Length: 108
Image 1 (tube, rainbow, N blue to C red):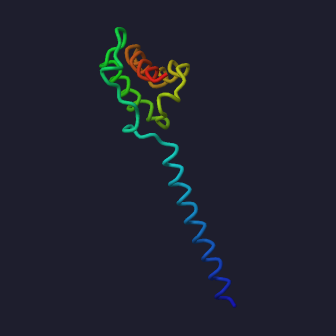
Image 2: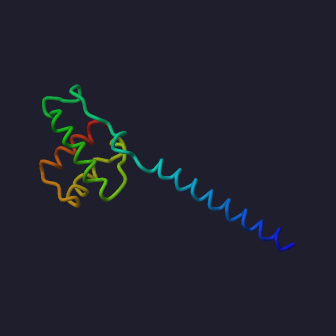
Image 3: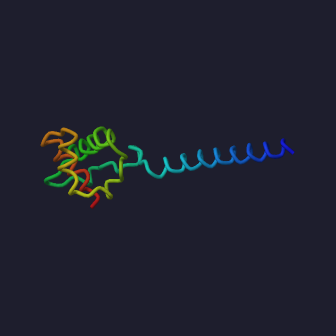
């Protein structure tokens, strides 16, 4: 009788661990945007006031600075209103702030 009780607890614990691992793996895929999946600016995105170099620099700033504190979100989901506060927290220069703003506003 004791072995059946032990087997049931062991099975339940094993299933709980498997469920927890599956949950954690599933969350990590949905919450994180990899740098590779972020929009890459092309020459057709450049305008008279926004150069391709600025857009590329903005993307690099976004990847290398914003990800230090939080998940990289698709740029279409980043509200422009948070850029000044986040740029200040990240210690970005005025030029870097301008470049990352141009990149984030690219897909709006």
